[in-house]
Image (cartoon, rainbow, N blue to C red; front, top):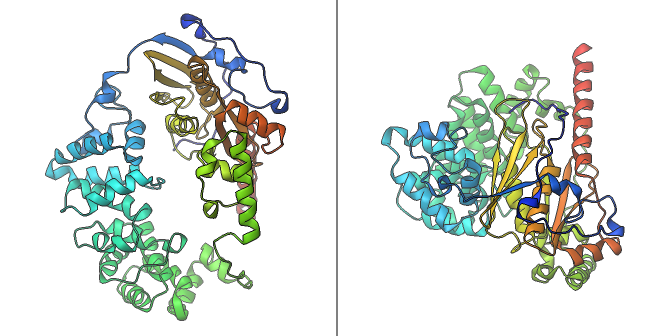
Length: 490
C-alpha cells in the first residue's frame, strides 16, 4: 500500500459529450443546494466519450498459473481487469464462476498451492452475496479440487452455517477455512461446537511460521469459550519452544473460559507490557452492558415500518421489500441501505490501487436497472504521483474521466462524475446524492430523482460533501501521528 499523501494536481479539461450530442443539464434542486446532483453538475463536462467496443480481454480466460496471478495487476492485454473478475466471482455470477472453474482445472500441480492462496486473498473480507453462497455451497459438497480449495475460506467465513459443518470440517478442507468457520461466529449465529478438525487447523497455525496466523488461531480457540477448545489451546501453548511465539499465543488466554491460562498470560504480560491485551488488563473493569435482544423492540419496529412506508410512498419502491426486523435503525439511511438504494463505505481504501471500479459497480447497482450492462475499469497510475483514469463501456461508447491520485483515498467526485454522465447519456431519471456522515465514511444514495428530491424537501436526508470525509479522515490520522510522536519523544 502506498503512503497516505495528497497531490494537488491541475485539473485536466477534456472534451465533453459533444461528440455524441450532450443532453441539456437539468436545474439543481433548491433543497439540495451544495449536494452532488446528477444532470446539474458542470463537472460532468470533464467526461470524454468516443465510439468503441468492449475490449476483447473482458471475455478472456482467467490466469491459470501462479506467475500469471502474480503479474495480473500489470497485464492489461491477456486477462480481464483483476477487480472486474474478482467482483464478478464474489457476486456469485454463474458465468464468472464457470470461468474460475475452467481456470482452476488448468492449474499445473506445482502451482496449485500458490494459485489458490492468491485467490483466497482476493476473496477475503468480501461481503458474501446470496448468489455466491449458493454457488460455493454446491462446490463445497464436491470432491476435493483446486476450485474447492480456492473458495472454501470465503464460503466458511461469510456463508457457512450449522448445516454446512460436515462440508467445512472435512479432512480435505483448507485449514484457513476451518479457522474462518469458527472465527467470530457470535456475530452471525451460535458458535459451532468444538470439533477435532479445529485442533488440527489450530496446531498447524500455532506451531507454524506465520506469527499473525498463530495469534489468530489462538484467539479462535479461546473465544470459543468451550472446555475442549480451551484445553487444546493450553496443550498447544505448552508445545511452543520459542518464547516470543509463546507469549504471542498466551495473549489469547485473556479471552479463555474459567480463567484458564492466567499464569501464562501474566508471565507473558510481564514481558509484553505494551501489548494491547496487557494494557487492557491493567485498566479497571467496567460492568458489562445488559444483554439486549437483537430484534427491535415493538416501538422501534413500528418506527421502522413507518419509515419503510414513508420512503416507499416517496418513490423508493424497493423499500417495500425490506424486512423491518433486519433494519438497524428507523432513520432513512438505514432503510435505504437495506433496500439497496444507499451504499455506506470508507473513503480510505487502505490499498493501492484504490479499485475505483469496484466502487463504481457498487454505486451503479443502486440505480438498477438504469446502468445495467455498463462495464467499468480503473487504469491505475504508473507512479506515485500520476492520476487514475476511470473508464466505462456502455452502448458502444467509451466514457473516460480523470481521477486524482490521493494516496489510498477514493476520488469520490470523479466516481460520481462518471456515473452522472452515464445517467445523463441514457436519459435516466435517477440521480446520486452524497450524504453527510461527520467522519471519513460516506453514504451515497442512488435512486429516482423525484424520490430523492422529496426526501430532501422533507429533511429525511442531509446532503454532504464527498471531500469532507477525506478531510476528516486525514485530520484524524494527523492527530494520531502527533500523539505517537509525542509518546515516543517522552
